[in-house]
Length: 631
Image 1 (cartoon, rainbow, N blue to C red):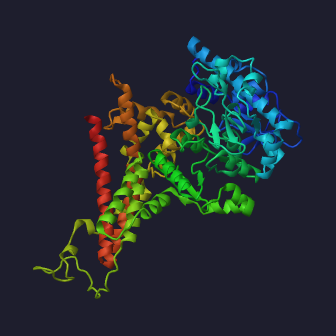
Image 2 (cartoon, rainbow, N blue to C red):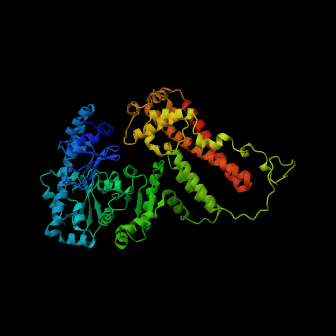
């Protein structure tokens, strides 16, 4: 079946999970969630929770975790497709027609899962056997207890070229090669990939073994060896320990990214369960996406040596284009020569938590890195620093976040390079009309009557309170109705938007609430959610008003629908950035103008002019967005 992620998300969204589980388990309301005694293990005090908003259940006693489909497979014992079909019938959805190619691919993947699970079971048996004594001694010296060893599924690959091949001979050799368990050499006999290594299973988000990491026992290279990419395993899209760290993060509201799986295991031994690690690669965009689904600001905790700091900066560079309001990174630096195991052994879990408490925000890490990159004695070196910092800011695709990064860097540069000014003589009070003929009055003609320096208008003083004008809000909401994905991506910025009209403010809140627990929601789905609400009529009115002068308010009736949609989404996100930023800038401009009229110093004038230029640029961008929709 061609079951796309979007189709499955729609299916899950139509199922009331508490009702589904409540058919076989007594469920009670507990605040915004539901509780029950776990059906997967015996307990008297409920530790099984159902989060309706996010669409999952989790047991804090045994770790059972899943969504509506997982409930049907694990609790009811149905196959995946049978579970999907039964839920689809209940939700009134048609299951997509069969696709022979997709069915074959799914069947092959399932067969490969049997291979790697068989390998995992055999590796565990080898570690538990008499041959595994040296490996068990090594783990004990590393401080890894038997419960932790079993929880992470440690195993042993004997130092043999054919032991695993012989143990899994029920599987065709071609499958063993495709799963990464064997290495095939042209015109020669295939042989075991992992030999003489401590084996660590790598699992997907659902806890299924998909690959392995192997640490050599004794001398040799490479020290660590991972499975190659296979139909089950793409190392750039998988995080080690995600299956355990994801439920743990819901208790701690954090995720810690460390360099390797032994770091993860050392932290788990110390009681820190919310750690993950990339698998032999720099942190990728896909892995950042997985982390940001759990928490908005994860901790990156890399070694303090040159290699660790280089890895941290690579992660920062990879993250910059993906930043959006509320989502960033924090960097906790380990002392040089120490890893997480050293920290928790010396200071315990509390000491590691103290290290996280001192983590740097991404903007500070970038600033510190570039300032330390070289001398800043000459104008050219200072200009180079500014160029590097602004290049980092310009890499950010979100217009609002990009603007704030540029401003943050400029403020730091101004502070770093600020000159010590000599004491000035006291100025005479400023008069709005200095005498004619040169520098009369206060000795500087630029303080003459300038409309930019007049007392701010009432509208400017109160714009942060009065809110955005109705036509702009109408265009915004109309665009968000057409492109609901922009709601999720700009949620934090939109909640800060001062909407004057109470009806439009209520509609925007309802739209933000509607996408809170759903991904892949389209225009029709959003309208279906809003239909029972009193804001529905206003929503349909704004959606029909497609004559507003912005690309995101127009119907996509051209042949180049994909290109037009991409342009509209980009324009909509920039429009949101302007609407959110301009009231803040104008409020600061009003304050700066009032301060300057009181102090009449050069610094106040420069600040006022800077804010005035920023406001003017935002107005220009707004006009350009309108013009671009008509071109």
